[in-house]
Length: 382
Image (cartoon, rainbow, N blue to C red):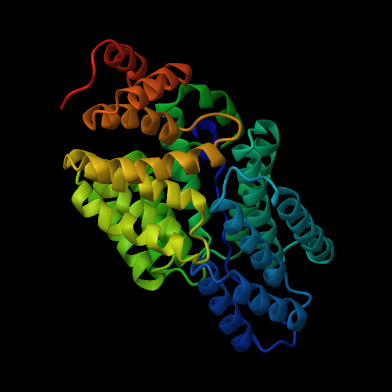
């Protein structure tokens, strides 16, 4: 998380009208519709929309760029699953080659700079997520240079400020909070938190194609770094008003209440996520179902509804055992420990002991080992 974020300079780029004999009104309409379909988790529809863009505007990089973004969102919704990584990298490589071909003929082509910068930004972000730091740094630096160059050629472009905003904010905040990141910063210009926020908000209200992504970043950074739950909720509400079936946006909205220990309000969102997952709605996969059952179980635990709490924690436990293939998640560690406490409350001492013993085999989290050892000796009582 620490070093990853500095390279998550996601460069969504606007589309510059070129002199080619295209129907640009139709192009604009198609791209906007496709972008909305991506954020609405209507990936099949988005694929068809950008297939049309790619066919009708075959020499323009927009179609290839946004088809790669469909793959990116599939990855985001199941981030530990690397099965789509190769496809994503191949899509971006193809896009970069296309942009290079355009720039070879005209080194001031703004479209090609925009979309190559965007491709490098996304490729760098996935490299960082997969902890390929050197590759991430190279992509981030080259992508940032393209953003600045494209802005020099077209300073009236509001959308390009998304790249600036993300960079300026994270380049200031991350090194100050995580000193381990500082060595990477010798490759990059100085950051400016306040300036980054201002740029992102400008794009969030005035951007043409990057408005949604800017709102997405404002939602995330207010949650993760600013720790302003009201601001996070503001942006999450705006996003959910347009995309009510995006589990990523819903999760952040619900988590603002978790941060405030307001589980009564949080579970309204997580019950909805759980129900959508059970109905098999697109994007509502087992990871979102696991998280939803965990917070629902926590709400019942806090309300001392032991049976109901155990019911949902058991669901979360099963999903965690299925999802945690390489290392145990915090969800599994907490769930196993809480189930021991709940079974003690229900008078099922043997089950409680089994869960306490397993807790000691898992990574220690928030003194879970200390309390498990304590409850092995003396049963937990509320």
